[in-house]
Image (cartoon, rainbow, N blue to C red; front, side, top):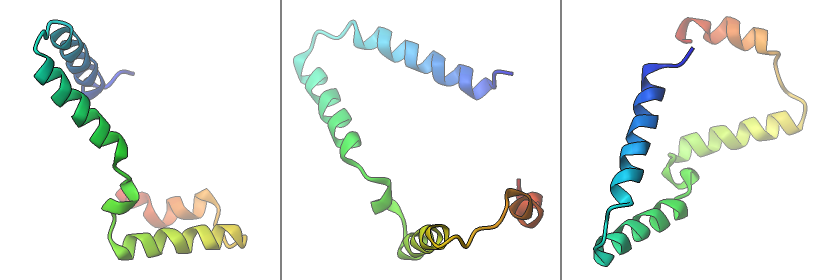
Length: 82
């Protein structure tokens, strides 16, 4: 089943591609290129809080040490929020 938001995203992409193909102003194209370059440089890790990073690192350490729970247990604990 295709979600409405998926259709909206695809429609927006097509609109942007069409608009981009009509641009003749090099300054605008440079600005778009710079925006793309800056977005590619962003690291999601830097956008997390120290508590989130610590939690992620603890989870990785736990998994590396075999301290994991089955999916069914996680679903039982967190199912009410899913």
